[in-house]
View 1 (cartoon, rainbow, N blue to C red):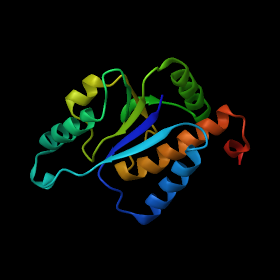
View 2: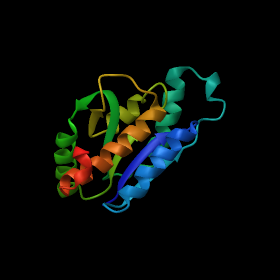
View 3: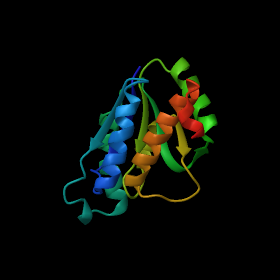
View 4: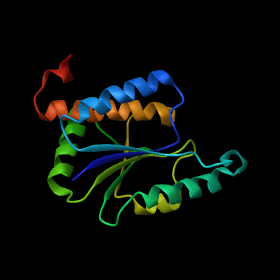
Length: 157
């Protein structure tokens, strides 16, 4: 099983790219992980928000196979402490037999088709973050989750 993170659009800020890269390198020591960036829709600025979500949704669903377990990072999702997320992660690692895929939507969120395909939703906070910042926060929390599961010191530093 592979853990994947799918996100829409490239990261514009160098400091975010550097932080994401830092945690992507660290994650390699724990589990097979793939970060997939779906390019922005060409001329997407001319679309309504619903049309843009639909087009992005089609691209997201092209990256998902039938048996994959899909978790949307969504403000309406379940929230976890870091320890609870580590427990959640371990349960998924023990039970999911295909890929475990987390998805960060575009600026306007997800299409109905993506919501309908999802197995679960989770939120990182009650606060709203840019979809680009969520990439960094999520990769750090995934790394933290693995350190918790292994009893390593990072979590308490």
